[in-house]
Length: 50
Image 1 (tube, rainbow, N blue to C red):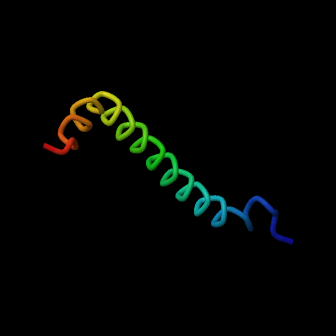
Image 2: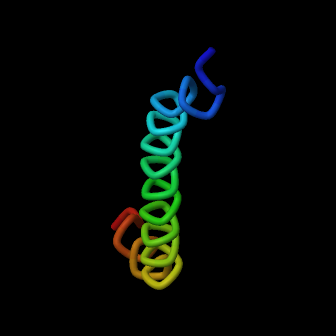
Image 3: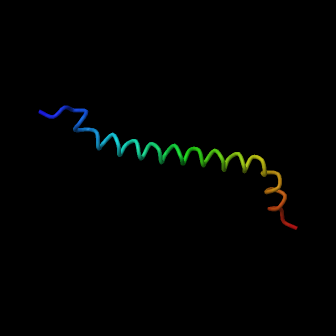
């Protein structure tokens, strides 16, 4: 009988790949949020009607 850890290895590898993708998306989102926070006043100013 094959041990469970050997049977689930491909599944765990695929899950890790998707967890890494999610973590990268979280990190990118934090960068975007920080850049928006730093530039919000300028964005509001540029968005005003003349």
